[in-house]
Image (cartoon, rainbow, N blue to C red; front, side, top):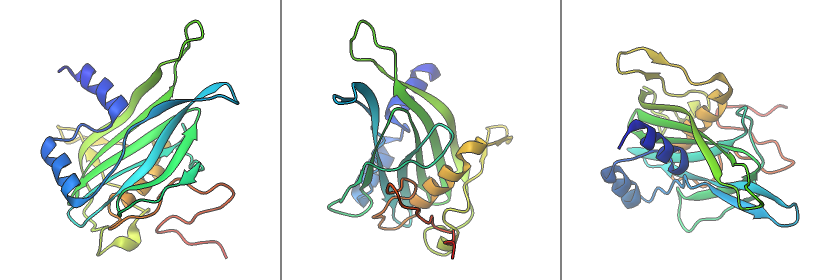
Length: 214
């Protein structure tokens, strides 16, 4: 498989995790759903993109998927989702364009993938394709803090740092710093049962590590 083919697959499907990691996530009951779908709104006569914020963590491992706008801005969810167990689905989001942020953690080591999703051009009234592209991809990042337990008060305030194979820093795009910090919080949230970045419409949510205005 070429890097170009792998990049296309990850843009559509999410991080390419080894089978051993997938089996371990399943054993631990962590269900981060990176699936993106194209849906048709009949009343509005338009196509939209649908995603599900999901995932969570145990102390040893975490996997979290959330979504934002093209500039990294928080989006309102369509509705929250209740799950049979913890570390599962949290909320549905619908938008004309979505940016998916996915993070996989083992201990203090993190993989990060940021992808863009939007309806493509329609040909002769046919259903358009879902166009997906990778905006940022970095593997084996490191965060020395134990956000799962000892330093959980820092969730939402910090993110892992990434380097190239030659040791040069790989900088997360500035517009996505906030959502990446929230995704890192989700990948360390033990028994997660709530959304870390999508918000209820008409409400202001306080992210972990932040203080509400008096």
